[in-house]
Length: 188
Image 1: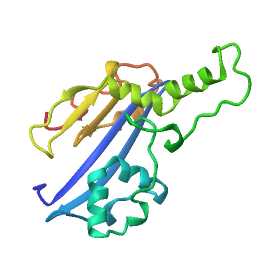
Image 2 (image 1 turned 90 degrees about the vertical axis):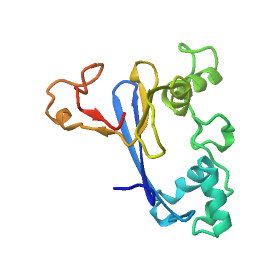
Image 3 (image 1 turned 60 degrees about the horizontal axis):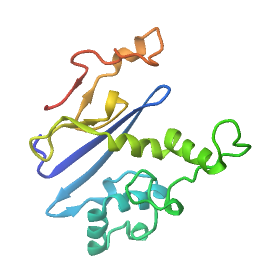
Image 4 (image 1 turned 45 degrees about the vertical axis):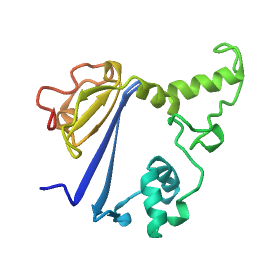
């Protein structure tokens, strides 16, 4: 299929903390003659301001076209892993009830540690380490970026075959052989 009138972006984000968590977000934004088909953006309305703040060019286009998402344009909000994301605009604010003693010197350190290890701070740290594993040759080509030890990856137009995972007898926690040869592919 020729991708000049329709582009499908698959954002695959794989994070490994205690177990492997795969979150696959399929976002389809169709482009024809410089306009977007906004009905193809399938997100919960609560997430729309965060999405539009990440994709400013789409928000600007929406304002010009008076698109159906106008009510979400200009609202504050960021996920928490972006370079510029004030804590009060972040999607979640970590809270650690109870005593902080024994782990860290202060309550603030406890909250900061939680954010860095189990919230969007972890994502931000992994994104700082991203290295190119598969470089695209053209706009709709495959790409894959991963952090050290492949703890976090983000890719586009990548095929990952997880069928063998259903048949594994042992847990995949801390395993290095989760994907075999030919189970991950694209145009790299």
